[in-house]
Length: 294
Ligand SMILES: [Zn+2]
Image (cartoon, rainbow, N blue to C red; front, side, top):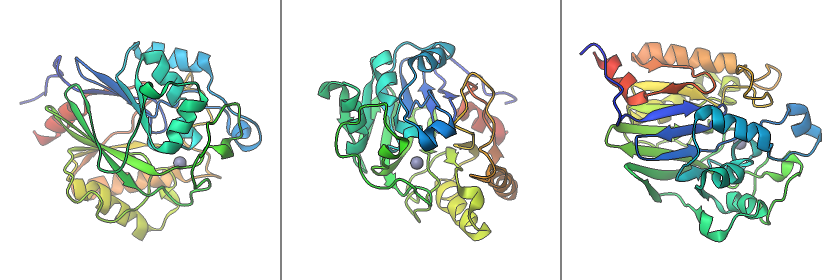
């Protein structure tokens, strides 16, 4: 086989910056996070932030999507959760998340029936997708730990978006399996029993960890799942609009260059493929794995 055809049934994944993903097959669609407003880092540091409906609508239009079944939120920091209620309402989707995330939904005026709390070990079925929710640990340092314990009504300071538990999503589909691991926390052995041919690997903050910690992270996420394709996520400067090409996070705040060097070195060592996605780039990840096997 020279090429795995991207057929009508193939799963397609569109990268939307940070760990925001749009996942589709021919029948169903869901998002992870759906953070599309991306207020400036200055505003995040000293101002108040709120979803930006124009940026959200522009991004959804660029994806060519007007319906989705679900928005799954990895944790409740603003760069994951802030826009999720707005995106869910635009797309007629159910908002899935921790109690802290649902406080953001309530603050945005979402009805109870449009929100579902998830816990570690829950399975969410969306068409042919079966998604297992796995709670882990946030990358360190987590500058905003804790819970959101009352409805959050933006505009608010970014510091009001407390973590509320950090979750990963194992996605099983007849075409293949993938793990979406948004936050680069090292939770040893949490994925030892979860095979996945593709890992969307959060690399935020990992470039500043020691080489030993980086190897442990790789071992407990990539090696543990047996992945053949690694797609780094959360490597971009999320204070820039998606209307412009993605740029790495400022060096003062993170060392994304070192994180990607690590991904390259470890992929080469292990004979894996890795792919750095551009904003709005859509790939058929399982077809890429099939290609790599030839
Ligand atoms: Zn976070």
